[in-house]
Image (cartoon, rainbow, N blue to C red; front, side):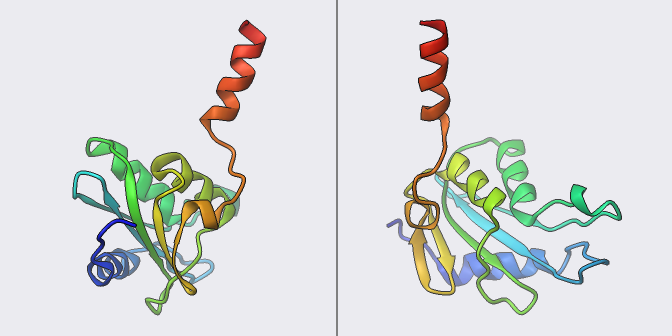
Length: 137
């Protein structure tokens, strides 16, 4: 488990949560991630009148990760409007797996868990490579 200042990471998530655009659900979400080079990236949810095209906070965080140089997420704190830990949805768990891997630490209401624990039996690039190799074999 990486040495993480969880209080600072959570504070970053709370700060960005306050800028969430959630006029429909009023459910504000903020997330902050520690990158393997020491940067902190963050995101907030952005809703849309066409509900299905809203963006989860983790989408914004992963976009910022890549827009600012890439790298791997090593720790993530996601919070609700009260600053309490919030478990990422299924789609966002997949984003975290893809950009942090099985050892990425996630703050949850049950404490810090690895992505391996949060998303057991995850689908990832190894599954794609297996099929690609077979079909081009």
